[in-house]
Length: 425
Image 1 (spheres, one colour):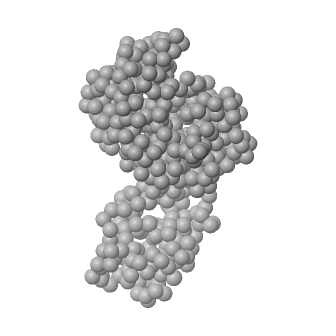
Image 2 (cartoon, one colour; image 1 turned 135 degrees about the horizontal axis):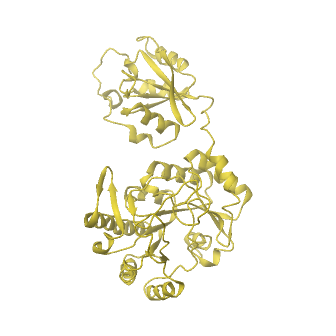
Image 3 (cartoon, helix red, strand yellow; image 1 turned 90 degrees about the vertical axis):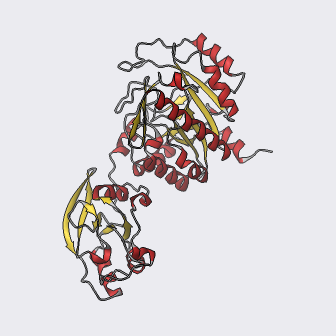
């Protein structure tokens, strides 16, 4: 009996060698930032001359990626997989990555979803990845001994803290092992990429393969180092084909080996046997220049602010709102607009909905249930936010996770407000 997971495997060219001449993939370069620095890595943008991971000619927003996928599928219907593999790490760009995955899951439910990560920060997203039916995840593991790993990574960043040396390697490895275990608990197919680095970890590949088997990994991909100039490993010699074949044969005692890897770019598109990246480059470039479309003809966002820097006023206490727009990727204040006069009960909120009728959202520090429902019904979404105005604007315009904007919940929203006379509820 063929299961849905078997069908997914049959249509994924990277996990199934028999599919590489029938089905293709599109990589969406929405993740420019990275949270580790590998001594072999040189991430490049606007680069058309190299074919390797970490390279893309353009970076897309979530909205632009949605248009790009649609155009790619119109021209190349053999594409069955949508993946994110950089040019940085998907989960150093969590909002962009998850926004893109949600968009594809909604608009193209037939597509297989795939992620390639270093594993450092994937943990908090694993439950949702499973909910979105992300069926294939690749984790790059180059050492299972921190003494070796410290020679591979210059630094590892966890939030705003940067670690170096042995501490960095220990932290990264612990996150990778935990992530792989949880991915397998969710039934997600896991491939491990391992960069073979002469004199650094080439003697260590068997230990890695053995540990990955222990964790239930499905496929192992030993990849020869690609020496990049101006990196610490730029002067090393790339392992030859015979060396790599010997390493793969040894690792195959533990796990099935991927021998058909094409070292895809972060913007790769097409079949592995019939790559279309060059052909779609102009399409990618065109999509990268698309400006966010106004929502239902609403180009603006209103902001409740005391001093023009922070979102720090409750909807009911604001006497006026700053009106902002996004112009060519940056944010510009258009005007300051008077609010509806305080008092008047429900009529006030209907009046405010008309005043903000050209706004897709209003950023506030808090909002009551009644005005929330009235404004939302009128197409003006109240968004509770805490912090800089630009962070709130970016989240609204780029369709990021709005829950991350919230600070302490306002008592009016909790139903515990004792009343300030502001007419907030």
